[in-house]
Amino acid sequence: MSRLVVVSNRVLDLGKAARAGGVAVTLADIVRTRKALWFGWNGEIEPAGQVDAVGREGRIATAPLSDIEYAGYYVGYANSVLWPVFHNRLDLAQFEARFFERFVDVNRRLTGLLQPMLRPDDVIWVHDYHLIPFAAELRKRGVGNPIGFFLHIPFPPWQTFMAVPEHKELARALAAYDLIGLQTTADVANLMNYMMSALHGRIVPDGRIRLFDQLVSVASFPIGIDPTNFAKAKRASDLVQARSSVSRVVGVDRLDYTKGLPHKFKAFGRLLDKYPQYQRQVVLTQIAPPTRETVEAYSDIRHELESLAGSINGRLGELDWVPIHYIYRSMPRRRLGDIYRSSQICMVTPLRDGMNLIAKEYVAAQDAADPGVLILSQFAGAAEEMSEALIVNPYNIEETAEALRSALEMDLTERRARHGALLQGVYKRDAAAWSQLFLEHLKRAGPYSASHEVA
Ligand code: ADQ
Image 1 (cartoon, rainbow, N blue to C red):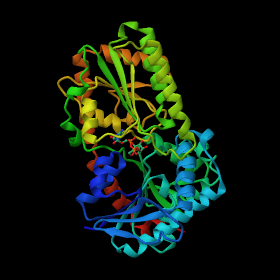
Image 2: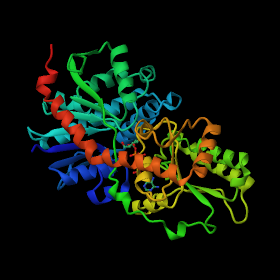
Image 3: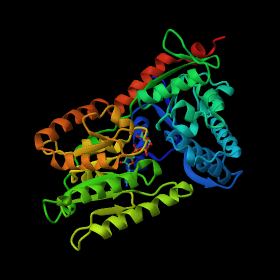
Image 4: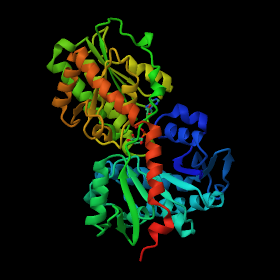
């Protein structure tokens, strides 16, 4: 069996990754369970000139970034250009030429560090927007192995993407992969539209797309979780409300402008205003660990939320009832499972999201005999598969408040029916099935020599 080389921006040690959640757990599980090497940034920032040593420990190979690289590649191009644009927030993008240069330089430097460790029969799987140029840089070094790419965030509508000054360079870089995996069929349509409308790409008879004289496969592979990690969740005794009639609505989101947190708070406030019978009967617990605090657009959102929560709590709260609990911390994953299990409703209402694993984790953590209700944004990738959730438009505060009301009123039979269908999907399309499907497709899409040497 050939070795799998997983490349991602951030590499954690296998023990820590299991606690971190999200992509890190999924990649760590892949690396742990097969012949594999995991390569990427170790999270450290060193002065320039001291970053070219690869740290190797078993299946993990990592390198630090320099402070200049961190500013231009990570904070700059990845998180102040690609992240906002791919989430339809052109207004927040900071286009600066030196960011892109740094972005390509870091990808080039990292391929130089990886290349000596590569074997001829390795299969290479690159993850996420930070590393779009990775395959093109490997090809320049003569690497002919099959290389796949998976984008964890959404791909934007083609005219939005064309606003990126370097969109053609990015497209050229994407065309160097044998397979591009996206979360949803809507993302596939966006990327294909861009390739065909903006770049005159053509679909060839076997379904691949010919672009810049390369042949590339594009398909959707919706990511899953390992539901067994949440199946043992318990109703936590410290989370049971003093009055058993009080219901908990939970939200778990990184503190990010894509997550629709102000909209969520407003919808919850609207429910309490419109239906005063729910006052003192329901609380919203929002867990929102701050991230990327060095990026400018992230500093305002915390103040906005604090002031919104403060005004709702001040206006409606009572001595023995605070409507919105707001926690800025990370939680151990087992504790997160218990919080899901102790919550009658989960609101996953991002304005845009690649997939959103919280939706799947919440479903996996429920008691099938008395399950909670998932309220899910139509703009989360998860909505394409999880149609039995209550699907809402998060911009529509009134509609979301009504969905909250429906969730609070939903009878046990309907809750069980919806949850049963959702849980089946979460098990069927779990993380292991996702990676297997992608890698099988990559095997068919490669090898590089056959697909890329077209005149
Ligand atoms: P991610 O941020 O990696 O995003 P996401 O789907 O948002 O993944 O899930 C977040 C993960 O972090 C969950 O596994 C959750 O348990 C964990 N987490 C969140 N808050 C936490 C807290 N306070 N304490 C502990 N753990 C917490 C990218 C994309 C997503 C896509 C994933 C996977 O932005 O759209 O779903 O990749 O492809």
